[in-house]
Length: 465
Image 1: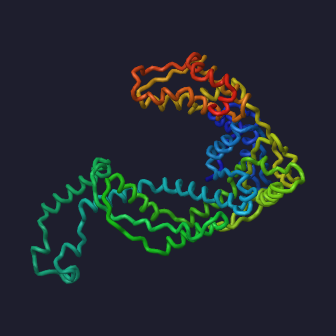
Image 2 (image 1 turned 45 degrees about the vertical axis):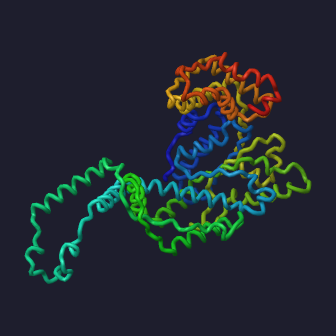
Image 3 (image 1 turned 90 degrees about the vertical axis):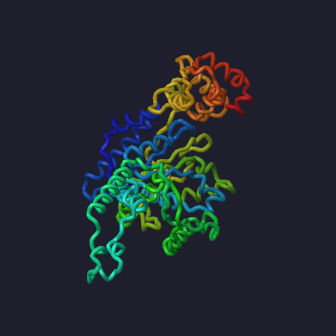
């Protein structure tokens, strides 16, 4: 999981394929990512001194904060976790350990490395799975099964007929068996049904321990019991395709070395992990009052050592957080970054304000990203034989309505487009299987007909849009 050598401009260009606008935020995360690559090329003594420049993204919901962080992690193949700071407040603060975010990050890294390692052995595992399927269809007798007396293997047999099978028959069987194996490998027999032995899933142990405070202990206890208790086998009928999947997973388990996977995952977490903490403004203290504010400051003081650099004990061993990149985000409508405790403020030196979306931003979000909303809805209804045609004035109308509703009600950013498109296409999606007209034009009149009355009535907008 080596850090990719993307240049800042390349990172921004890649993010532009999925996220509209917010150039300053993209630039900041691109520099932070490139600095990781630069640090790896310094001496070890210098590497230890250089800490990540954590980022605080400030802006309303739905403008791309989470998506920037998620796409960034996916871009470079880094372990990534998104958490909400509010999980650790009030009641949650008592029951949920702040260090759990690092444990979850390591678990994600384990899954990533397993997937990568599995790809290396995929062909080998599939070949072994196909051999096991062949063995079910056409069992190959062992030497001991071929002789009448097992001791004949060592001392021979006086029965010449038992000693020598007709060579022609043996060769014919071998050829037919080979032909069947080729058909299995070519997926020609995937729909055939066979009976195979599979490991029986034992009863779960949920309920032995309950509550968030014992979450990690419960998981470890279940894994321990699972490894101690022998797995029962049972015969089950299924298609060849399904049997191949099961056999393939079992063969992959034999190939994978969990010790190596854990070592790689922990190293990847420590060197390239990204933790995105959302709703960061909710733990900012708005003044010295009693009640939840005590919890808020407590959460800040618990998060502080994790961000500063600490060693967190996980079931995979200790994990250092010194070089994990933390990206925090919040709207900060009521509170301000300066309401955070000074120590925590200093650990987020890069602060970027994201802008609210304009009509033009909404229009671009509808059309420009590689998997834009317009493309998604068009593809969905194509499965019913319908062709959706979004005209320019129709897209402009959708963008204007989204901007207007956000301004007059609650600003939820780009998520408003999902609500509006669902309302516009509700009848089309409902009647799609039975509709005679297979070409639907989504123009300004069509959009206005669906939305005008709702948008005009502010109270209705609050409930519907």
